[in-house]
Image (cartoon, rainbow, N blue to C red; front, side, top):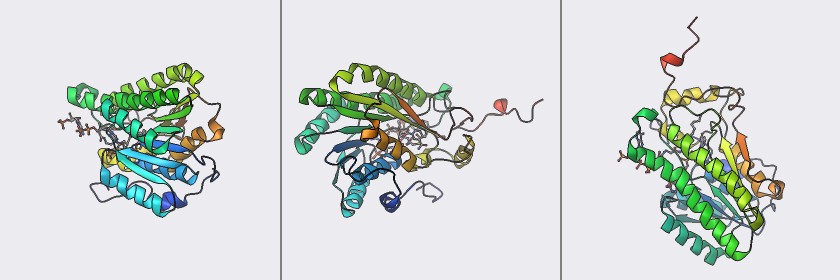
Length: 289
Ligand SMILES: CCCCC/C=C/C(=O)SCCNC(=O)CCNC(=O)[C@H](O)C(C)(C)COP(=O)(O)OP(=O)(O)OC[C@H]1O[C@@H](n2cnc3c(N)ncnc32)[C@H](O)[C@@H]1OP(=O)(O)O
Ligand SMILES: NC(=O)C1=CN([C@@H]2O[C@H](COP(=O)(O)OP(=O)(O)OC[C@H]3O[C@@H](n4cnc5c(N)ncnc54)[C@H](OP(=O)(O)O)[C@@H]3O)[C@@H](O)[C@H]2O)C=CC1
């Protein structure tokens, strides 16, 4: 809920009923772990994967958000459970993966949707603010990726990783820390897609454009109002758009795809500019000769 009382994104009821192209058995018998699974995008992925037949394990820092999602999924007849996990702690991540293997006996897909940033001019970043964003988005994602891959290697089984990143093509103004972290995740994903292919592990990224979720609470109303105009389709996307991209990568449809960045941004990487902190006068060209 935004400070002005506005609610962003899709409700559990909407996610339970949203039309999908995917078959109800496309992930039958599989287990999917979704970090940030009770956030806007993670929650949509959890619903879609559950509706594709997977058992879902959702993680995040806040127990109550996980409980609400698990209750809604369970009530709809899906197999789901939640575990509190801060991805910045390697120790906690390792303990989590040990517990999941013991409880589930397998994991097929990991979606790293835990992440975020705050808008601020890069020149004003504090060391603590920089660390918070790098530790969450780059180190946290890596902790999850490596812990999963080690268990897949040890079990002699393959797996599938989907990292939710940000469109880094020409930077996003006001969130340079996250562009640094996400560029790192994209490069890392391409590298380990090659290293881990012999282990049967696929590694891909999904890069969302402006997707309306609760995560938008960190931006001002004025900044948010510009988001529909940051791409040539002149509208924002929904968490379901991102979930279906994750569905494609997890289902047999994605079986020959690795080391890829699937951009879902309404064409924003080709035309449009995103100023998360507001556009400075210096860059306004419309009234200049
Ligand atoms: C068109 C598309 C729009 C832009 C594209 C991207 C959109 C999205 O990704 S939206 C969805 C993502 N969700 C979020 O971004 C959620 C909001 N963000 C966060 O929760 C944080 O930024 C976090 C993910 C880094 C959380 O880290 P955490 O350690 O929990 O953060 P703290 O609140 O404890 O802050 C640590 C440290 O960071 C500095 N800081 C935090 N917020 C701000 C801020 N608004 N302005 C300046 N600095 C900030 C600060 O140094 C904090 O330490 P303290 O000073 O001791 O509080
Ligand atoms: N919405 C958008 O327009 C875009 C989003 N993205 C990216 O997509 C991903 C999902 O975003 P979205 O769903 O919109 O945002 P949300 O803020 O709704 O979800 C992010 C989730 O990440 C979890 N999280 C944050 N830090 C940690 C941590 N240290 N350990 C574990 N979980 C954590 C939060 O859960 P909790 O609070 O319970 O810890 C939260 O639910 C993020 O990486 C985001 O930056 C990229 C481009 C655009």
